[in-house]
Length: 192
Image (cartoon, rainbow, N blue to C red):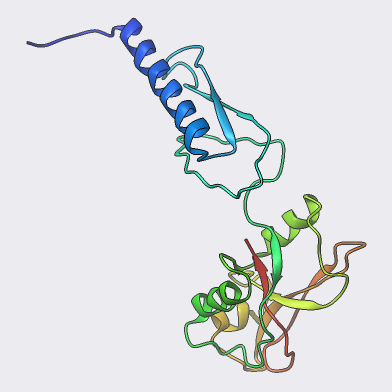
C-alpha cells in the first residue's frame, strides 16, 4: 500500500509528542538548562521548537542539540577563558596543537588552548580574566608576512617562527601580540 500526500494532523501530533517527551526528559532527568515550547507549526515551514531559559541548578549539566540552520543567542555561547596551563619552557611540543590542548586539559579539566576568538568573546562576555600576565593562544594561519603560524603549530622553538600571545589586563581586557618562539617562557591560555 502506498500513502501519498502529507497528513498535517499526524505530523503535528508527532512533533508535539516529541517535544513533550524531550521536555519531560529534561525535567525528570535534568539533562539540560533549557525547556522546549510547543511548536506553532510543523517544518519545513517553521521551527519545530523554541528553547527558552530556565533557572540553572547547582549541578553542572550538559545536553546535545542538533541544529540545521542558524543558531542565534542574546548571551554568550561557546568556550571562554578558564585559566592557564603550566608554564611551557619550550613550545616545540611533540604533537603540536594536540599537545597544547592536553597541557590545558591537565591544568583545567575539559579545557583546550584558547583561540583569539575565544579570548575576545571572554572580554565581551565579562568573564573574569587575570589581572596581569601573558599566555600563548592559537591564531591559526599567518596573519602577517613573517612565519606567524603558532610556532609552526606549536612544534618549533625557533627564533624564525612567531606565536600569538595575549597580554592580560582585567581592567581593559588586555591586548594581543606576537613574539618569537625561542624567548618567552609562558603558560598557554586555556578555554572551556
